[in-house]
Image: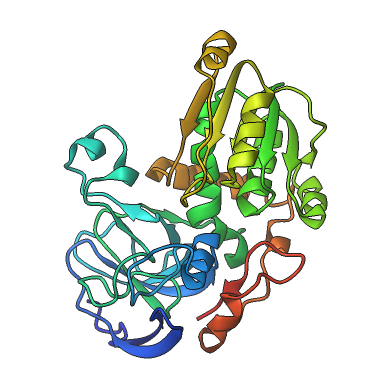
Length: 337
């Protein structure tokens, strides 16, 4: 490890009963590893599900997988240099298993995930709700352009990159009718990306305030007509069923929000065949989606008000506030450790 790198840091450890901010020793870096000083972390909905008990996760752990930071030390052969401001992938694959070799590194048989590893294991500083994170060899990292603020850059690491992945199965979007289900950060980002690609974008949500916010990102309230592409970020079976019923001939339904157990959906095989429909799921993303996310945010920084949907950050000692209800008018709470 670089001789000027710190030996101790502070981390917010999720214990199952609450958050315990602790001093934690920083390990010696192995070959290819990076030590990153967290500049800002945004709070993904999956972490809110964890602390509310809706989602199982290793415990204790340092949560947080949507963040931006500065490289402060590197192991031999690392893929970044000291001083770079970077974002990094949620997942890191082994690179050797059949899934990795087929290009599905996010579904690696031995996948490890930032903000999802046990604090008592071999990667305690795996999450963004800490002053420092250790990034393992092989994780994808992307340098952040100077024109992107921390609040915007952090979104690339999960929300924006995930949206880039969900758009892959949609194919060409120019002139196509796209329905976005859910106007959270994923939904408004998808609306912006689809509108930017030349689609006619409509969006649904049960919250009228979010629908109004979505207008600023290219999405208009849904009129109920047929669509060519439907993308669901809600995970609600009723929303998925309604979206499926809306598909015109040759339509594509992309499911990205169904990450928790829920009611089953009845699908009519004849309707799928006669309608020439495609139903597909997307979970996590590949490294090239992270790079595409950074490019998209940089290119549209003056087109869409990305920074406005992130709250003013709180310090690490107030992280419990950030893990509570999201403040009105924004889509992500933020922490500046």
